[in-house]
Image (cartoon, rainbow, N blue to C red; front, side, top):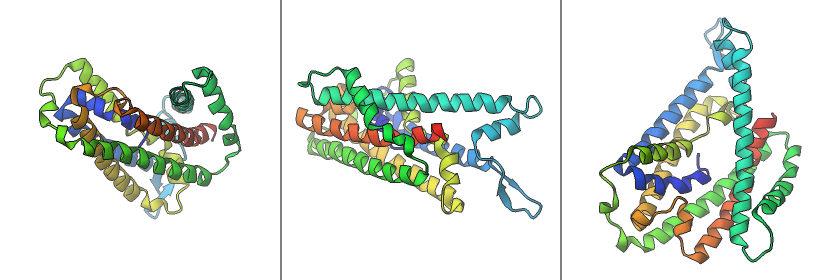
Length: 275
């Protein structure tokens, strides 16, 4: 819910204006709702009216939906799609890590591709991860690093509060730019692909819906605050990745934090893909 792509939200507001703020809230509500529906599909009532988990993955759900057409067709399509998405996510984190290392240490005579290979080598121990408990601890560290990044950016923006102006928001929108904003905002909430694994490994699965409500609520508040303060600070000068707007010393600090976050984010999609 709080991935690296949150850094693109101020740029999304640049092209969506006030509607972007509304979309951040709506996307949170819709993603939370669809997450609950997807997990509900894993359960069925038994003869006593109790909900029993009869499915474990989206593949099982797809097979149940398409069983009249083909018993396994839906599951194969969904499974392939999921694995491809997870692999692409893993690759994306490696590319981002290489890019961040290249920009953080420009004086080191190493290419961006080589940095990506180095990042990959450091992540090889992920193949030994067998339980979600280890992944959850790494994800906690990832969340802590993400909070530091958000705190640094928001704190700097608050020091520039004298420059803020609501007039920076656009009233007129260009359709193509707005679609880009929609993609950035919705993608920043992507978590559905991990939900079956997460819910299945919870100590108290009955608390899943409550957990989903609170996490999406706080994610919405944090995203809105971050995007709003950053956009009000830089306005039309807002860049695609907001860290590029920061002074050089802060940009280096945040880039190193982003590198740490990218490396800590890698185990989750890797674990889900290999599971």
